[in-house]
Image 1 (tube, helix red, strand yellow):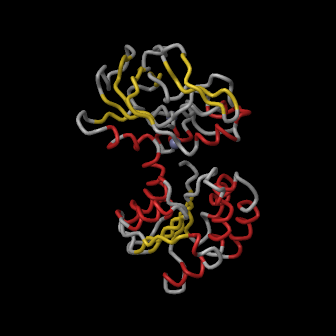
Image 2 (cartoon, helix red, strand yellow):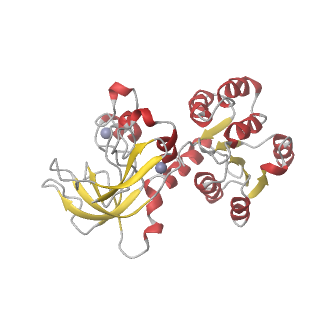
Image 3 (cartoon, protein in one colour):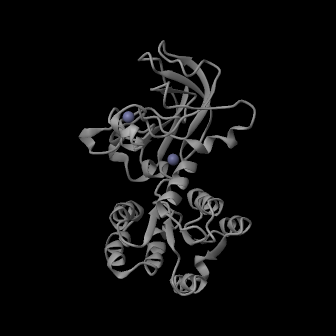
Length: 318
Ligand SMILES: [Zn+2]
Ligand SMILES: [Zn+2]
């Protein structure tokens, strides 16, 4: 079959590779019909090469039709339509039972100190072949795939694999009070969806920031108050405070990708820091201002900052 394989930094090719097979009775094989290309794939293309081997198959946002099921798969049959979550979780261990699927104890890669395995995402996450391929091997056929109806186009469902839950989770963590305000930094796929989910969940005021005209237009069409970073290089925090009665927004969501175009990540992070209390901001800028891993450090810092009275949520995927 054909599959997108990694060959080196900035070297990704469509190769012919062996088709996957059922290895355990709870496995399934999915014939892929649509698969996303993620902002996170750019990390593999650029900076995470040390954790890949030549020939590793990429991709973690797939959906398709069940081609084959193992003998103990009761939840699905060949011909069923499924979305496959990027995070490989068993659905039955202690962590999965707490709803912490990204820490699944059955698939986590302990020697790397990381969370659960991921499709198509380096040795750090299990080196599992990915979904940018004609066929995908999927374990835990009874619990992992999301069965969806036949009929509507793939675009109605494929975002369930990663970007929609990622954006939804960012909004959950941001904990915007009913009718409250949120600033979303970055309006790519995750930021745009986060802003729209925040509106859907009852935020009273959603402010978005980006510098790509098409993204600003798309956000404004959804009644998001979109600010052009190019016009607010030096006064972004002041303008957002002005828009929120001088207090600043109730919540901030950072949705700037690590390899954002023109690397505005650190720049945006600097601007956003103006909205944070000093104790948090100092620590934040120490980490966030330095390099292209800004969003990753940011995510780590935000974990610590979550205890602060300020609401701050981060999403590095997408
Ligand atoms: Zn993704
Ligand atoms: Zn589990």
